[in-house]
Image (tube, rainbow, N blue to C red; front, side, top):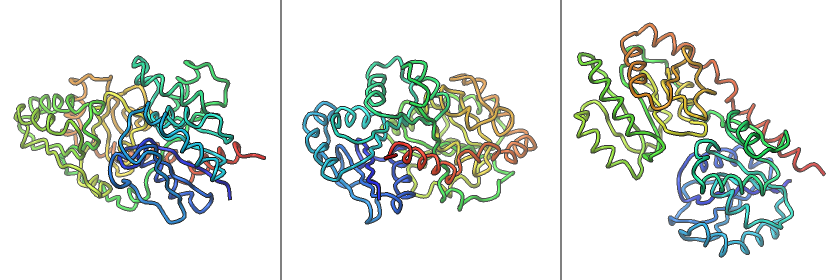
Length: 366
């Protein structure tokens, strides 16, 4: 059985990269000998569980900065990879790509950097750019989430064709199991995600204000699921804007798959994304989507005018207009719902798993 390690910066934290790592491990832990390595551990327990077949390792069992992680953890990481005779390592996320990319230099195994963001989203931010450059350069292959990101890596780093590969995230099976028929009578909008700057909740509040002006007599509301550093700030902005009765902050849920039902439209107001899983999940739940057409992600999930609307980035007026149109035109909303799955086949689990297996087989050829 081939020996594979997945390395993340902090498995005691929750996030898209950790969730994708978890999904991959669960799907492949009977096919390979799998090791999951957390470079640091800020919280007492890991946020994700794995089967007994999976080996777990924490390098530094406390919160540490990047430099400390690399300096203090290098010997332990190298020793573990060599002791367990790991043949292939996946660096999951930019922090893991930077730290483990440096720490594992000299270890004789194949390495893959998995960028769960998007290169061009933060190209002008030097630290973020360097993390991706080092993670990619210190690996045999770079896997990205979108075709847009793949093209950007080739353009910026001048790699030979084949060095960068796009592999999408798949729709979680629980999402598909919990799908219910579309509620044609609902006028409730839905957004879900961490309350951090890149998710653009400040713009969401502004869009909601515009909707209140455009639809004074319509009984619409907006559910938002998530938690994060900006939660209280956004709550205060909602209150100050007089939107407390319309915009509902519902916190974190362990059953998000059940909360897509009963909603009219899914809205994404992010400044940047990699491949937003919530858009894929919303499409699987027959929800029309309204999203900013940001650098990476939405345009590979939404076909403008078919299963949703793509709005020029950060154009709050156009987004409010698009949402208002859908809320007031039941037929248009229902037609988009009926076409919500037109792009879903490329996000099917087995199709994507075959791409991962093919990559592993290629890199581990004798």
